[in-house]
Length: 274
Image 1 (cartoon, rainbow, N blue to C red):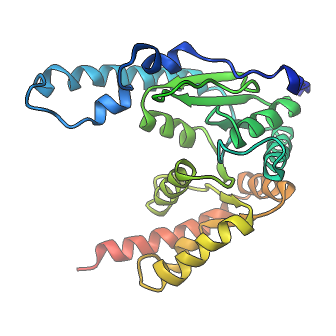
Image 2: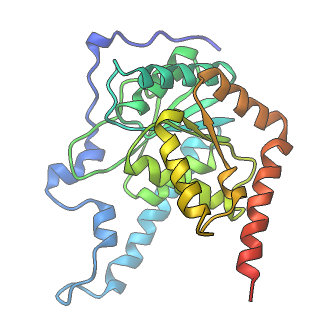
């Protein structure tokens, strides 16, 4: 692949996308907010509103499928939008994405700042496809300057589908609620067999160690999860190790499949008990 030099940092300005900021411009709620709003007596019956919204949702799925169908092998990278370029974890994310890009993977992120920007930056430095899946929010925003393929969404659940459908693995860098949301949803999809041979890598043992310990001492100790469920998570501190683990999962399907099968078997046992 031909490498592309990232733009000079001093010239960086995150572009503002009008379609992502329509709610801010119009002063109206976002589409997600309207969809999830509880009906009020004075509103029109849902048969006059929600069924029509389904068509817009369907169109958003179609747009996403068309934009991403030919990406090839890809890895989705998550992490906090509140990470500065000077933070070592930003540099680690950029290096991880660069190594994965050089290994032939497209890099997918949420298209925003922080870890997302770092990952898109690393992808571009490697010459790999750099994809950003952005979401309409009730405040002004834009896609970071290192995204080559931008897809914009109004509905979180459509965007979430794209993150999983077109990825061979998730790499989860330190982050907040949104990052945790993606982490636990992916765990549930693997545990229930909805996705298979899907490495779920947590980058930064110092950051994630406390969460893993809580899972062991509380969730596992109280029987809310099984040991096999915790084995679905892989802790990592090295960008090259992340790359090697994901490359291995692509070429050795049995490596992750055995661990995932154990978690599914335990889930099946629990759900089938009388």
